Image (cartoon, rainbow, N blue to C red; front, side, top):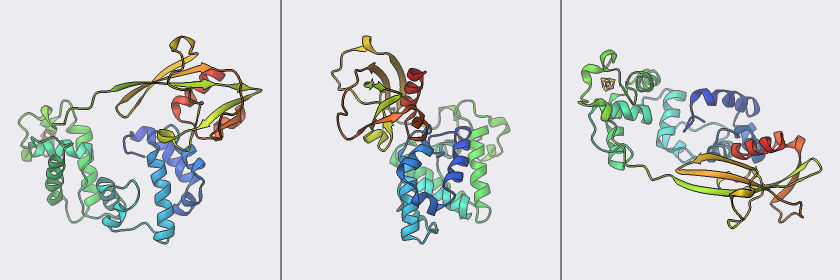
Length: 287
Ligand code: SF4
């Protein structure tokens, strides 16, 4: 949950998730609909699908016990090098390094790394710097401390070098200029047009594909649907390197177009997974 999402946002979701799915067996048994419903509002739904798939593999392939070996962890869906190392150190207190955004910043400054940290050579350098620093004991405490150092002292802008506890080891000549990153791809703007169809306290929704697969959204209109003027709702939301404008158009009631569409009672809407931009639109329009 914490990938790409801040702790304060995650906490209520984490508690509710553990209440609904207190272990791998409960998560593995749950229908995808319930899993996505518990995740809605957090975004990046691939994480929920990966957790669900991982729970099934742990139950079926590891007799319900999460693997202890980093290589085996990395075979699980959605678990890369960083996540496997984070689990190994925080869950099992293994003396292994972790390299994420905060740690990357601290290490790139400590070692005055002049390579982009989001390039393969930069990543390799960071993991090589990180490994020999990890103590044999209390590795979880050490890794937590390094994360906190990055979050509170060695901050992105205005690092507090005067009070930094590792100042005497630091090679950075111009800390604020580090870390170096590659240029970001330019943000692209997309317009997505959807329909509002209402009939006797029911609303027509469509089972989403691709980005929100397994969730319910307002029915999509084709790309040539006529312009902005007829829209009764418009809002913007970010998605990876896109800025998406969601426009909703009132549409006359019609027969179901295909099997991916279904009528839902208004009272059912809270119990089905709907991505946040569409839920905000539905709430605004129904209110
Ligand atoms: S001395 Fe400054 S740049 Fe170096 S690690 Fe500490 S806060 Fe970061």
